[in-house]
Image (cartoon, rainbow over all chains, first blue to last red; front, top):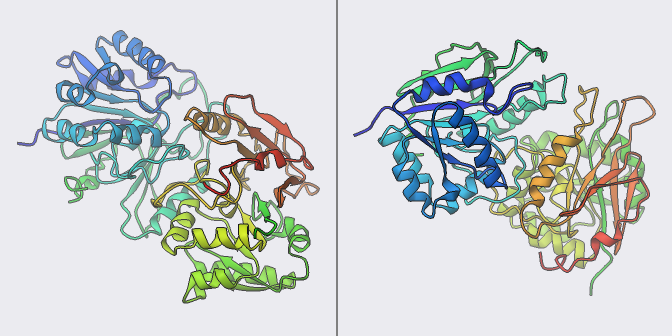
Length: 258
Length: 258
């Protein structure tokens, strides 16, 4: 019996001027609600897992949730089985995906999220691995995972648009677009959603939110303030404002058999 | 009997304001000399191989060399066996490396270059695959090669620094450094040479050359005008001017047994 799939896929974990997850904390609280008491954190994308868990724990405790980091558990698969909610943090996507495979977590996370319906949150790399594959990551392939196929919680790719805090002009659309276009030169490649696409973005105090995709069952909605750009193979990219209903991206038979 | 290894590893195939290979054509002529008559071109990094071969052919013919593109040969391995010189062009590094594996060319190119001593030129992705692995590419993993191990013609990594022509400020050192630092968090990772590193670079008419690494047997020298930055695991990165002797990077037992 399939429960309602619930995902909050965040583009960036920090934005200029805000603390860790500061720009999306209200979305997190609204997403997790009051039923969830503890969140299982997966810190595999960064090298220093202890420090990473510490940062995440501080944030989630401030929001009223307990946090268990999976790297502190002697049985990661069992930790996923018992989890009420999962949060996978950002870092290097290759390192993260390899560790998910190495710890035999792909199947179990998919089961918990798609069958049991527990809430899944990801930011940056954690958003990337929630999609059908990491083929559109911006990260450096510092390790070699056994596959680029990821959790497949949604049947398309996401390309989170990291903001370098020291870069005043952030429109790097052409280069990124060129890369995604190259991806779509390959046969049968799925849609790519470029989150946090900014045609003309200036860093000022009032603009701290990035982009999030909220998935509730078969409904997907773009949240945040900065919009996204959608790439379909062989079609011209299209711009989408916050609030856009992306549910049509979910209707793909690949979802349960990636 | 091992011949003298000869490599010309170019960071970028085009620089702002110059045509294809325009900034390094004198280095190419000096490297190939007059003995070489025809160059074998490997266009696998781009999707449109015909168009790519056309561009490369035009350039090499203007320099006095014939050019055969490997994709026009019915037997790629045989084409490598017969080649006098090899040039691998830039594009997507994952696509390139996968095609080298798919066509069973890794072993044969290594043999031609390391044992028979034919000259090898690479630019961008073609420089990346000449190194020990593509772990430090900047490209998007649009396909999944059977390994990240590359030709291993040198026992270290190179990270070519692509210049986006529309980017006025090109110092993106912190982000790139952070990625290379993450690579070196992994055990036993080799040195990384960031080519074309620019601390403060302004695009003006007089500054059109990028960086090249010239390898002649056991001697490696940095060429061009823009310098490089060397990353050794656990050490602080160091800046190096054109003319630097990098031969010490070649003394690694990994070379012939990558």
